[in-house]
Structures are given as C-alpha cells and as structure tokens.
Length: 351
Image 1: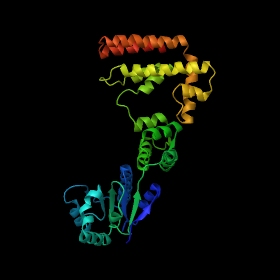
Image 2: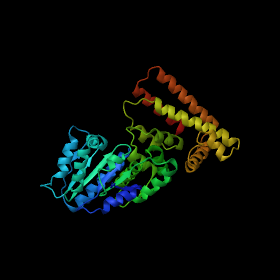
Image 3: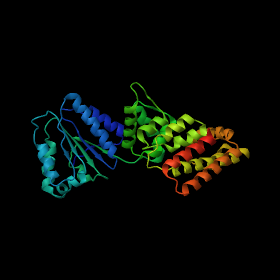
Image 4: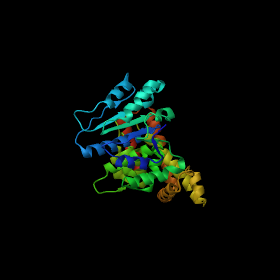
C-alpha cells in the first residue's frame, strides 16, 4: 500500500509546496486542528499558480450533500476555461466518509487520483488525526503534514524562527506577547508574523511591542494599559489622547479599577524596596514572580522609577481620590459626569 510522504516540519512543508512541479503538482494533505496552517498552505499555492498564469479555477468542497460525488466529477474532468485548477477540500473526514466505507468506491477513487489531469493541484484538510485508511486513498504522489500544538518549551524558539522566516526583527517584549496571546500552533504563529510583516512600512523590519499589539490585538476603544502607564509616567499628552478613544458605551469603573490595581502594586513595591528585599523577592511580593526574566527586569525598572516619583503620601492621595470617585459614581453619576469627574481628579493627582 502506497502512502503520502510524511513531512514533520511546517517550514519544510511550505518549502516543498514552493518547489512542486506545477505541471503535475503533488497533492497536499494537512491533518489536525491547525486551521491557520491550511490557510498558509493555500496562500502559498495560490501565489505559485498565479505567478504562472493570471487566472485559476478554485472549486471548494466542504461538508455539503453530495460533495464526495461532485469532487470525483471535478477531478475526472479536464478544465476548459483555465489551464490551472486548485481544488480545496475542507472537513475531508466528512466529505470522504462514505467512500471509505465502500470498497468499490475506494477503488474508483484511487483510480481517479492516479490519473489526475495535468495542472490540477489539490489541497485537503482532515480535522483531527488522519486515519491510515484515509491516507491510503491518496497514494505516493502526495505530501502530508500532521499538525500538532507546540510544547511550551518550543514556543519561544518557534516564534523567533517564524519571525526570521518572515523577515522580521521582533522586540523581546513582542515575542513574549505573541507567546502569551497566540495559540501555540505553528500555523497561528506563522500567520501572526506574516500579518505583522504586511503592516510594517516598506523596508522596515523592526516590530515593537506597541506595534504588535496594535496589529494583532487592536483595542475597540481605549487601551487601559496605555492609559494607566501614562498616568504613572506623568505623560499627560498620552493620557488625554487615550481618554479620547473611549467607546461611549464604556463607563469609568474599569479604568478606576486598573488604577487601583496599579497603585496596590506600587504600594507593595515601596514596602519591599524600603525593607531591602532582593529583586526576586520584590517580584514575588508584587505578583510577578512567575513571569519571564526579561519581563521581570522591565517591570523592576519601572517600579524603581515609580517608587522614586510617588511617596507614601502621594500613594495615599490616589487611594483617597479613587474612594471619592467610587462614592460619587455609586450615587448614579451618568457617563458624561463620570468623564469630567474622573479626568479632573486623576489629572490633579498625577500631573
């Protein structure tokens, strides 16, 4: 029984797609739950075909009634209006379920696959782990990538390698942001790096944390992290710029809670630093003990700077101001009044 060539590495898999003979291309099989890997492969295949010809037929089959028969009809026929075809099958485990159950139909299927018309390229996605029976349908003129989630210890290296393949130079904070917020699948990480690259200005390779957040995780209104950072950094221009982005449906309880949490962190940092605790203990005491060492270093630098700017008396004044705002809001203050009270109160304390 002939089976597809198994490819373990996604980068190698995409490289093989890039070098296949377009006159008689290899069938491309992808199994597993990494949908972004399927999209990356499809984009690569479309790019290759369109680089040869301005037009291409792209019939798509999914889990629709009679899709198995329509697929067989499609691959048997020679296209009349375009020299290239790119046939896409999603949910292959459902599309070909009836074929796999019938010996005669499996034989017919194998015959059709072995005698595909030239310039016909097929991409098939099988959700979950592909069975040996399914793989045997495609013969040796196929390549197969079984996608898997990355192990935690593999993620950082994969992000760095993916960024290099995309021509990016990611800031270390950006690498960690992708690790923490993108699902740990090769296709998802590759797609994230490609999206970052595509949004950079022409000729630019460097991507900061702020740029990556803006591209991959855009906020629908204000960015509370940026807003709070601007307050404790004394950056009034940045603060008022962020306030202006507020969604009208947002109230001011979330930013007040964010300011309260940051003030609590600063209070704990002052206690730890005043008592001469080690950097490691300061991180544990402020709730950052399990974060990446690089991130801890940046946080510690920030906390040292902020504890110099904010005395114990000033920290107490922030608590008093927040308490006053919470009491005012609980009395039924509308959002327009909230904005005036919040902006005036925090501006008087922080700027």
